[in-house]
Length: 118
Image (cartoon, rainbow, N blue to C red; front, side):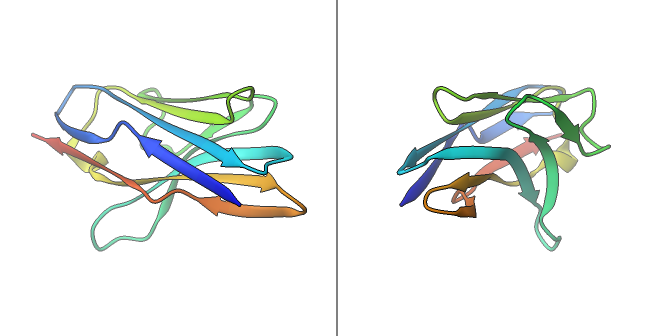
């Protein structure tokens, strides 16, 4: 019913930038929160950033000042601009939305790998 397609991951050197995108499609009536999570090897999945429908944002302390989350409500798309990447940012990044089809549910993308070399 709802598909999330992520793009933009890859391999970069420390200090470089990447921009992740996640486009939601399907029989979506409305989207509330959109967010990015990440999971590094051997660690639990953690919240990176989230944005409300109105544009309010929250960030993990580890990425504040370096990452920027944004969304395009007309395109049902969320972005994550990642600047000044560090090796510790290496993880699989997952897109998340809270969306209403016939009722509100949580939806996850398949994940995109971000690798930062030192």
